[in-house]
Image (cartoon, rainbow, N blue to C red; front, side, top):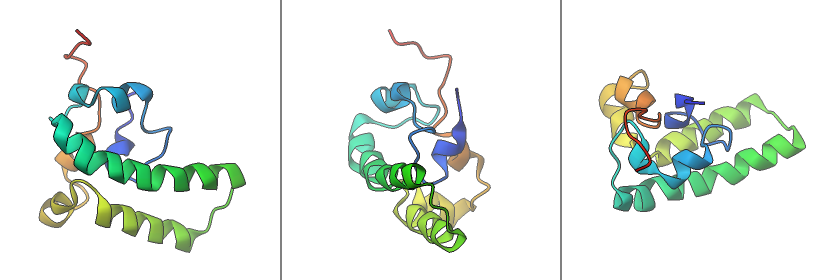
Length: 105
């Protein structure tokens, strides 16, 4: 349910629940609505359809997978964190998790 792979890897529908998509204010990493709309949504919209198509056709090519990951990292909303802290950064991994202390109101 609270899979944090969404924070780091190529966006997939299975990583981004409808709750996370509808309520970014519930994520562990504070993301303003403006930042969400300007930075995160374009990243999701660019890569989620690619993953959906690959899932439907069951196509997997390791070289294409590496290239897709590279492209996703280059377009990632927190790409500066990749450069500054590396891919093992705790902040990079967990920002997309749901903060269960926050409620829906």
